[in-house]
Image (cartoon, rainbow, N blue to C red; front, side):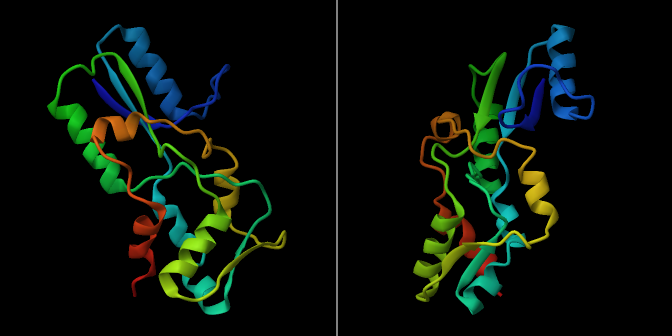
Amino acid sequence: MLYTSFAFPPKGQIPANHVHLLTEQMILKSGIDYTFLRNALYMDFVDVLGLKEAIQSGELITYPGNWLFNSVTRRDLALATAVVLTTTGHLNQIYELTAPRSWDFSELAEVLSELTGKRIVHRQDSSIQHWIYSFLGKIDTASTSKDMERLMGRPVTSLKESIITFLQV
């Protein structure tokens, strides 16, 4: 049984609304062979952060916090999954499919500056109201693992390469 779940689920008491953890628990209790692929936050989330507006204004404005991200591209996740599906040695394994190093919004602003040739700074503003920050605050977006790179046999796609598609019109 191959099951895709969410990277670094909370420890201890499983919340009743945590579908992935409950599913993992039921699979483990069943006694069947399993492989859990716990996916990091998809890099796609950057598309709701107003990257094009940041490029126009010169400011990437985010809700305050010590945000760190282990996000990866869907393409990298697909490659790691394909490796698991087409090779042996994955029985009863749990893989945390994340980037091996987390990044923050200041790094994102630096990459935007590099890609556009325009100075873009990161600024936090508590008046920012967006559903994404509530969601991000409920999941572990900071923890990292080398599982994905080990499975793929190459580094994960860089932050710079990952966000290029979200900047194209």
